[in-house]
Amino acid sequence: MAEEALPEGVSEWDVRLSDPIYFKGNFLAVATAAEQGPVNDNPLLFLGLTIGLGLLGGLLYILPKFRGHPGIKHDHIYHSQLTKGLNLGWRSAFLALSIIGIIGYGIRYMASDWFWPAVTVAVALLIIGLVLFAEHSWRNSPARAADPAGLSAYLGILAGTYLIGFYIFLYWAPEHVTPWITMVSPVKQGLFGGMASQWFLYGLLYTLIILVMGVRMLAKYRHNKYQIVRTFSVMFFQLAFAFLIPEILGALNKPQQDLKNIWPLDYDFFFSWQLEEFQSAGALGTFMLVWGIFLVIVGVPLMVHLVGKRWYCSWVCGCGGLAETLGDPWRQLSDKSLRAWKFERWIIHGVLVAAILMTALTLYSYFTGADSLLGFQTWKVQKWYGFLIGAGFAGVVGTGFYPLMGNRVWCRFGCPLAAYLGLVQRFQSRFRITTNGGQCISCGNCSTYCEMGIDVRAYAQKGQDIVRASCVGCGVCAAVCPRGVLRLENSSVDDGYRTVPERVIHVSEEEGAYLKF
Image 1 (tube, rainbow, N blue to C red):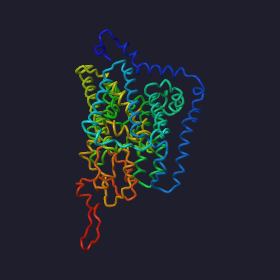
Image 2: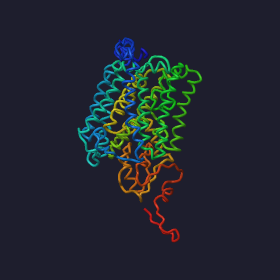
Image 3: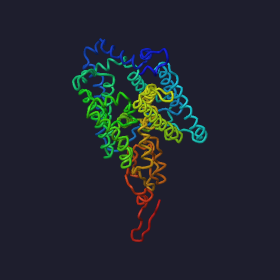
Image 4: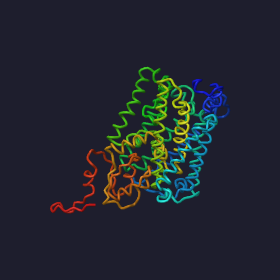
């Protein structure tokens, strides 16, 4: 933080001592070192009694599912209090309270600087106005509730509140979870050396949850080979690329880079401290820098052109992996209304634009040495983006709202990389989901299970291919279709010609008679 970036009469330490990041980081180290009690005396015992028993209980519940007949069974999922979700009114109330809480804490987080919180509120109001009034969604396109439940879904509310609370403690009050950090310290020391932090705790829990709930995915969708391979893929990439490799690199005093994390999802990739860390790591650091840039410029467009955004969002991404495994019981809660789709377009592309502008300002400061441009201070823009998008949206709302709004809230409404991938998929991808409308019985399974809020049944009834920027190619719609109407395909042939054979029934081969749909 340069002196010229500070107001007159204010020193760097005046800001740092009021900066929650600086204060919390140092306070956590002191709190962890000074901790006393039974957890500190027997960390492995409490690790087994909490996380260990939780994993064992989950597996004991999941493994018997392999004994049943393969195939999709609803099993009263729409009547379970944990998976019923909330109606529009209650969802809006919880979302509004979460946003108000995040913005309110953000003012303190920015050391009482109101500017960026005020800008965020103004942008939010602008998007609401555009969707509800400029696009006439308030009058002509009323949003449909994900389900008819009100407060009867109290267990889902409790689950969501627990997840929200966990992320709040993790990001902004880690000194209150020092016993959890102490519990996992023996794992850190035994495998990689060094002391555990809240980020090691988070990475370990994240990985274990994906592995255990991945087993549940394998049990539920074992009738579909695509789902089996895809589930093993997200489990492997989380375990190896997101957890083990970064920890090993850290133990070797190298940058702890997740090689599958791509800008702009990895929003701090071009921050000065990150670039300096790459340069100081020698050949390995140079490779990480070049690899990250290559993925953004070449890898993403090429792979999306060939196989769609599913290669990342459904096969590789850790956020998608958590949504597909832990979040699968709530996938039916995604709002399929036209209004939700309009909000989705404005918000996710707005986040992408914000990420691009923040990165442009970051690179400008890095190469010129200037701390601001047109009056915007680089460190404040970075700090607010990390707080609002990196923590508040991706963590608190993105995961905490699984039981309230579905499992892909972040991927659908906030992820800037998903927006980038989606733009390429919409206009340049060979991937699409083809439909055979003649065999559709309008059961609605496909739309119900679509986690991205796409009304798949409407496409199937018309015999139209599904080419949507938001589609992550998870393939669950095809897996739950009882008639085989949907197929995931890649082709360079125009879909108008390529899918004709799929919509034609040959009645008489000799007479050349056909029935077309």
